Length: 112
Length: 147
Image (cartoon, rainbow over all chains, first blue to last red; front, side, top):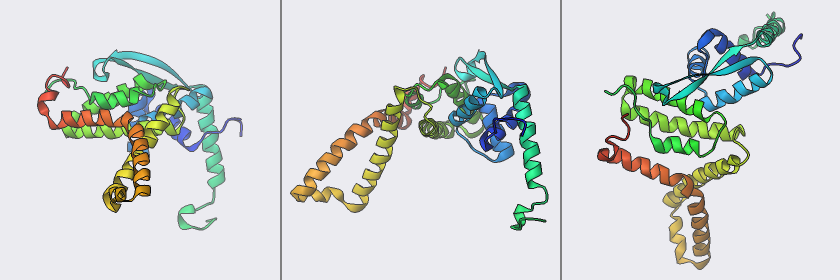
C-alpha cells in the first residue's frame, strides 16, 4: 500500500462523510451523515475524537467558522479532506477491492 | 415560538465540568440539534434528547480519554458514581438491603456503603435534581429557556 498510515474503519467513514458534505462538514452535519448513510448513531464527542486523529495524520484540516445565534454564539469547527486524506481513501478503496475480489461473505462461502 | 431556545443549563454544566478541548464545538452542535428538534418533536422531547445526548457524550469522552489531564479523574469519578448509585438503588429496592440495619455487621456495611455512595453521587445528583425541579415546576422555567 502506498500510504504508510492505515485508516481505521471509523476514520474511513469520517473521511467519506466529510467528502460528501464538501464545505459544510462539522460535528453535527458529520453525525447526521453517518446516521443517514451508514446507520451509525455516534456521539458528537466521539466524532471530534476521530477527527482529531485524522488531523494528527494530516488527512483533514480544520478551521473555526463564524459564531451563530443558533449555536449559542459558538463557532463551528469546519473540516476539509487534504490531498493526503484523498490518497489514503484511494489506497483504502483499492485494498478493499483487491481483498474482496471473488469473495461472497454474505453467502458464508469464502469464494464465489 | 421563539426563534432560538436554550437547552437545559444543568445538562450543559455537566459536560462543561470536564473541560474537553472541543467543548465549545460539542455544546454548539448539541444546541443546534436541540433547536432543530424543538421544531420537529417539541420542547419536552428535545429536552429529553438533550439530556441523553449529554450523558452519551460524557461517557464517550471519558472512554476515549479525551479530557485534559486534570479533568480525567473527575470524569471517572462522575461516571463511576452514576453507575454505582444506580446499582445500589436497585439493590436497596429489590433486595431490601436496609433491612440489614437490624444486624450490627450489616448495619456497618450499609452505613459505609451509603457514605461512599453519597460522596460519589453528589457530583451529578445536584444538577439532575435541579433539572427535575425545573421540569416539574413550569413557573421556574419562565424566562430561563427563552432568549
